[in-house]
Image 1 (cartoon, one colour):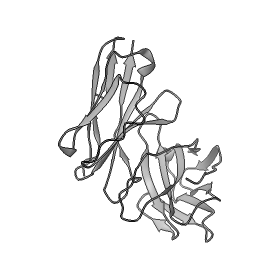
Image 2: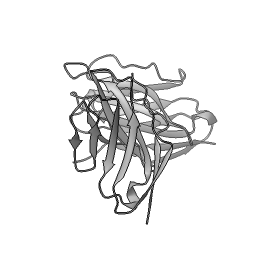
Image 3: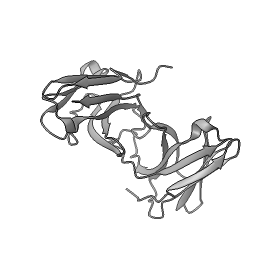
Image 4: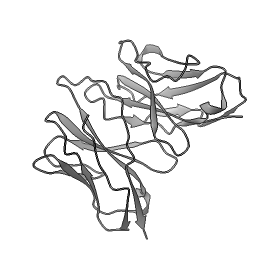
Length: 114
Length: 115
């Protein structure tokens, strides 16, 4: 079946611009996660959505970052006034209700801020 | 969550079995062992998980020792495409299923499969 998809696959933007990254989770998965991975680094948790519960935003690095999930499916991660340190691969994952640690990752969006 | 220890790197010949060890001596009774891998320039990929019984799926087998203090991920016939960083993660899955799913990846084992 279809896996997690993300768009765009690559995004180059100028410092100070806003960007939106999209994630389509696996159909039926109730949980959705955003992580980011800087070059040569491990994964950094950003935000977590589970069903209709309030999202856990504890990993968002600043108030320039926000995310929403509409209709319990598609999610958008927005970064306002991008900075060079925001350059990273942004990864989205989803998991079924029965096991939050069985996460299926998308291919990621490579964001480059110039 | 229990801490895991994995070798930094391992080599394997193509076609041979790759056996990747993981120590988790402080694991508690309700913690599962999960394995993920990350191929270069791709997102992490879920492989397998288990509690106490050995598990097998189309990708790999997971052997957990009787005392649960260590486990081994086995790729039965490694191919060049299995070259990746392999992560062993120990997490509790609460009764009832739903749980907070933030994953924390350690350094993992860099597996290199040679022709």
